[in-house]
Image (tube, rainbow, N blue to C red; front, top):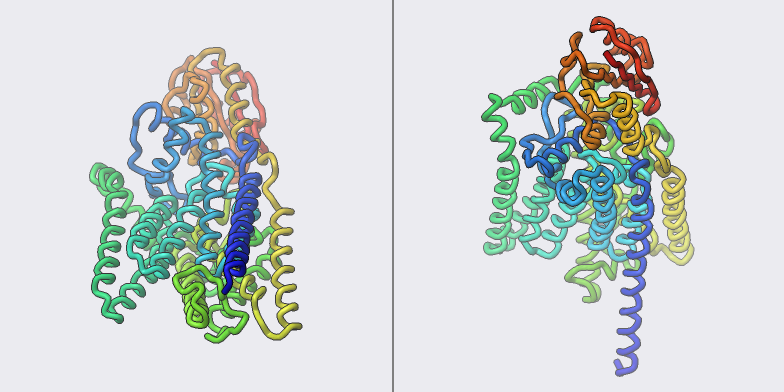
Length: 558
């Protein structure tokens, strides 16, 4: 090669890399644009958000360290405490401002886009990486998971890191990546108890790596993997020290509640297991691509079929000899080494696709057996975040499949048709998700509406201490308690309620949620609240208003 030719080749390669980086930059800007801005009104605000912010407020302002994470909705136990520690920096810098904490979560969603793109790129090259990043950037579900405070909303980042680090450990044979993968898997478990299902996915590839090294008599490498695995276990044990302290002081209440939940079959099962697993499968595979199954059943079925079809094709049906349809140019140690490099890249891709596909199969079966509530959809409540750890697997499989389709060689006509199909599929996915983005203002008005409602309550209380209770009684009053605390209202301790309502001179405030009308036994907006207040000393209704659709606040003075 002449000097000028070599120079032109280097310039061309550099230009390609610059274009790729420019593409990633544009995608991350798009992801940030869709996730950031107006977070005070865009993210929903209810008891879960109020609870989390009260815990963070106590942590950063009062120094009260929590031993447990948020309460679960699937049993009488809690998620992991690491969730609060991950949000603590934003809470500390902002003095527990919910908008700052939500912004922190949204930035995590943007980071998940970058990590998921990196994972796809390391499997099947630059095109797959750009496609994966773009699909997750515009995913309406991914955006929704980034704009409000809730423990599953950190899982997209932690699980993508776990998967990407595990694949780097396998691909590069650098055992230290296993420690990163294990640490991220621990975070996923803490953010949601069902995140434990991701651990066998990561652990399975680690076991395969250990077996591979032993098969090639790589004793040093096998020992390094073993040490990384022990480090992973050590990090997991260390992360649950606060839980252990709690269990010692509570006679093992969390463990007993978890055992009771598991022994009961993972909650009430209204649908038999054979029918439950396909429903869960559709929800897992369709959620990051087309959203909630009840909102778009046909789109969910089509997107799930797309994932399965592309995974089977790239993982099992594509032969080892691909010609021009192979992934020459896939990032990896074999890159640029001719036919041997292409063969190695192709084999790496098949391994990754099989790993992710089998990981999804395991996820569906485990959720179908262990979380029977996923077979039904509860209207008005968040539904599909419990399996958010599977989102990166779904999106990477689609990206690898579409990239493979775009590079598939079956003759000039076949190649052109394949590219058209890949491009059309990508356009449909992007268009669908852009058309179904979360609304600019949440139905309940978000934190801004809650703060405004609290200000009205404080004004109506006229400086008296405030006794706050909730209807139904089993639902927390923290959706209102947190904004009242932020306004330094004279709140009586939580749990002060009943006929006497504590201080007889206190303002009585009742927060009533019409969503639970059947459990309450009366309608909110008057009948339910008056029935609760009735047995107390004579009171006067000062104000009653609907703070959010179906969420009524009534203020009584003695």
